[in-house]
Image 1 (tube, rainbow, N blue to C red):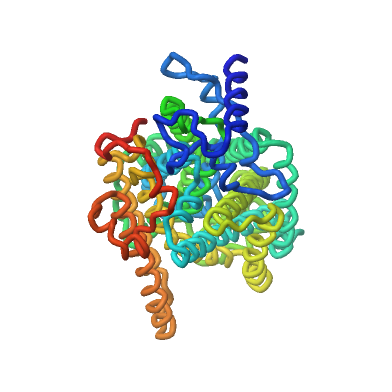
Image 2: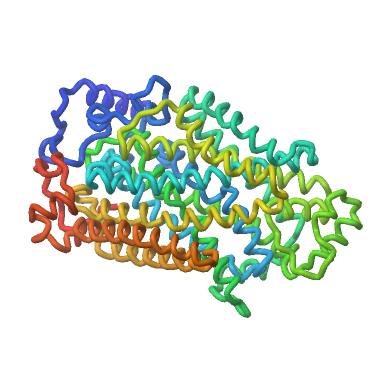
Amino acid sequence: MRGAGAAAVRIAARRSAAPGQSQDATNVPSGGYVQSAAEATERSPLIGTQSSSYLDHHVLVPEADPSFFSFRKLWAFTGPGFLISIAYLDPGNIEADLEAGSLAQYKLLWVVLWSSVAGLLLQRLAARLGTVTGRHMAEHAHGQYPRPVRILVWLMIELAIIGNDMQEVIGTAIAFYLLSNRIIKVWQGVLITIFDTFTFLLIDKYGMRKLELLFATFIGIMAITFGYEYVVSAPPQGEVIKGVLLPLCEGCGTPELLQVISIIGAIIAPHNLYLHSALVKTRDIDQNRPADVRDANKYYFVETSIAVFVSFIINLFVVSVFGEGLYLRTNQEVRNVCLASGSTYADIFPNNGDIVQADMFQGGIFLGCKFGVAAMYIWAVGLFAAGQSSTMTGCYSGQFVMEGFLHLQWSRWRRVLFTRTLAIVPTLWVAYYSRVEELSIMNDTLNSIMSVQLPFALLPLIAFTSNKHVMGEFVNSVPSTLLALFLSAGIIAANTFYVIQALPGGTLWIALCAVLGIFYVSLVAYLALHMLFSMGLFEGLSRKAFVKKYLFYTPLFMENSQHQPTDSTEGENT
C-alpha cells in the first residue's frame, strides 16, 4: 500500500500546485511543451462534459521497483493495450481472416504475424507520445496544424471511424441472424445495434477498471469460441506452423496479393493509433520525472505486446479453421455437407462447381453443417463479441479525435448517436434491400475506404514522435524513425495498390476519382512535408515566416519552451 499511498500524494500535490508551476524546473519547465498530465487536464480539459469519461479516472501506479521487472506494476499498466487490441479482432479482421484461409489455406499466416508485429511497433510510438507528453495525437494535431489542415485530417479520421463502425454493425447483425435461427432479420439486427451500444455507456459509469475488465471478457470469449472451432476442425499443426514461419506463398497470384493487402489494412487501423495515445493517459505518471516515464514506456510496451500476441493467436485460429474447411471447396461440395447434416441452410450455397466465396455468414453456416449446430452458435457468439467490443473502442476513438482536433466537446451519448446513425443508414439500406451474403461486398468496400485513411494517422504519428521539441529526451532514435518510415511507406503503398485495384470502371468514376485523388495527394504531401520539418531536416527553412505560418505551424507553447531536448541520435530512452 506504500506505493499506492505515495501515488495518491503525488496526485494531490500536483492538483494543489499553482497553474504554471513545475515540480522540477530543471527537468521540464511547465511553460514548455512537455507537461504533466495534471497540467494538461487543467489547461485543456479533454472531456469537460457532465458525464463521466474513461479519462476522468486514473489508476495509481506503484513506486519504482528496484528490480528490473515487477508483475505488480505491470498489472497497474494493464488495460490500454487490450483495448486497442480489439481493433485487431473486429469483424473486418474476422472477414479478412476467413477469406485468407479459404483462398490460400495456411500460406498467409506469416502475413498475419508480421502485420501484427508492424502494428505493435506503430502502437508503441502512439503510446510513447501520450505517455511522454500527457497529450494524445489529436491534441498534438490541433497544436501543430493550421485550422484548414486539421479539419481535413479530422474528416478523414472520422470517415475511418464511421467505416469501422459500419463493419461492427454488419458483424453484430449477422450474429443476431445466426443466433436467432433467422428469426431476427439482418436489417432488424442492424436496428438493434442502435440500442445495445448505449447499454455499454452505463458500464462506463462504474469506472475504468470495470470497463477494461469487460473488454478483457470479450477477448476471452473470442479466444474460447474461435479456439473451440480450431480444436474441432483440427488443422494439421505442421502446416499451420509452416505457414506462420515461412514467408512463402507458392502458386499465389493477384487474388492472394490483394488478400495480403486486405489483411494489412484490416489489422492496422488509423483511429487505433489516436486511441492508444489517449488511453495511456489514464495511468498516474509524472511527466516531469524521466525515470517514471521510462518505466511507463517499458510496461506499456510489454502489456501491448501481450495483448497483440493474444489477438494474433485468435486471428490464427480463424484463418486455420477456414483454411482446413473451405480451401478449394466448391459450392456444391459444401452444399452436400449441409444436406447430409440435415441443415436448413443448405440453400445458401448454389448448386454449382464454383469455389466458395466465403463470408462471415456463410462461414458460420459451414461450421454448423460440418461440426454440428453448436459450432454455428459458438461462431455467432464470437462474432457478437467482436462487434460489441469494437463498437465501444470506436466510440472512444471518435470522442478523443473530435475533442482533440476541434476542441468540440460532446456528451458520450451524443457522440455515440452521431457515429452510429451515420453508420446505420447505409448499412440498413443494403441489409433491407439485399441478401445477407451481399453484405460482404460492402465489407470489402469499407476495407478499401479505411485503407486510404492510414496516411492521416501514420504521418502525424512519425512527425510528433520525431520532434525534439515535443518528445525531449524521448524523441525517436534515427533507427526507430527509419523503421517507422519504412513500415509506413510499405503500408501506404500496399493499400494504395489495393484501392486502385478495387476502383470501379466507367468514365464518370474515373473522373471523380481523379478529382478526389488530386485533393488526397495534396493533403498527404502536406503532411509528409510537415513530417520532414518536424524531424529537423530543414531547420534553416523552418525559421522562415512563411514556413512557420503555413507549413511548420509552431504554437505558442512550443515557441516559449525553455526545454532543451536531447539530440535525436541519442533519443529514445526506452
